[in-house]
Length: 486
Image (cartoon, helix red, strand yellow):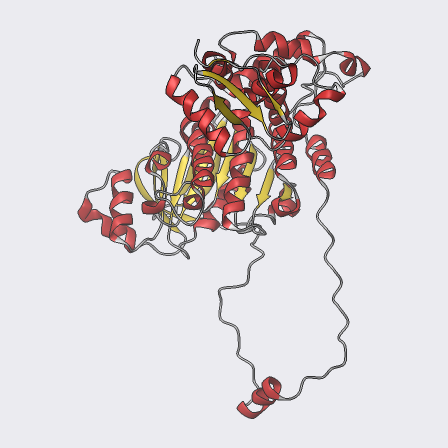
């Protein structure tokens, strides 16, 4: 049997000038953590790694500062300006990126911090939840990872932090089996959630000065605390490396040169203006010339989502087995969804597992591609679990309008109540609502009902006999009375 040929890249040189290699296949299995204070050369390191491996593996870059968009010119990466698209479009793009193995840069620099975290969470979660047939190997580079996986609560809402931290945890803890290799870079190890950092087996530690960060870096490198001072003495662009994809013992590496550059300004000194004090004072305080200055030509607007999706498809490394045809539109999805909802364990399974099952059922119907994205699938399945038999009927339009504002996790129980109210049926029991909600805890069902009532979705009435009815204010309808339990 022929020996496996390693796919290695040159990351830089050691103290003796010898080349230091990174095994990309090993990196895909073991992940990488990069740490370095601002100015240590952390972004330069990421750029070197991306440039050298561009022809070997798909790359997805989560770029909060817009540093890596210049990769598009030299290596053909597709830039997604997150500020130009809504959440639904971002999810569609992430699914298409996973399917077609296109290398992309998700540029978040036009968003505020909370929006950056939500956008990155949606993008990463969609790639993580992709069907098994799309589990291709990919490097997922997340710069400034402490923003997306903070160790402590910050200025963002608890929900945003939970979503972002959950997506990062999935990437680093469970992404390997799905082909996703996390490469996370941070300025401060102390600010990065420990469960995210702990999943990396390869480390590149740059210059840092705070004792707590030096101590954590030394622990990860297997160094004694008294040796941690060496991390403070590293030069810019120099990193201590350790890990199965790089080397088995800590070694100092000087990162090599790169072909592309950031769009940001230079850090080098520039000559100061030659004007004397009086001339500068005149420029600052003399009356302003009111002659209108011609407006600079406006930058072209970012491409619409359809254009981005077309670009991703055009860059597909693995084409579809056969194109979609008219027979795809002829297949009724509703029986498929109803058959899935009939399984008593449906609501207790992970969304990724359900979506994979749905994809298999669609292929069994000879459909060329899965006709629903993950968010649409979740909401369609919720309707099927609620017992809705004809969601496209005109009578259901008010319910569809309300459902658009209901969070995904409570949609199935809410629709079950709405369906009962529209039909004049008795109020669903706690057991039925628990089944739709995916819980076996009576306490969680009670908290669910209380949450929906506080959110204004429902109004609960209980008569003196203990029989419960639930009204839906936006519909002006109420279920018939029934015992809440059983």
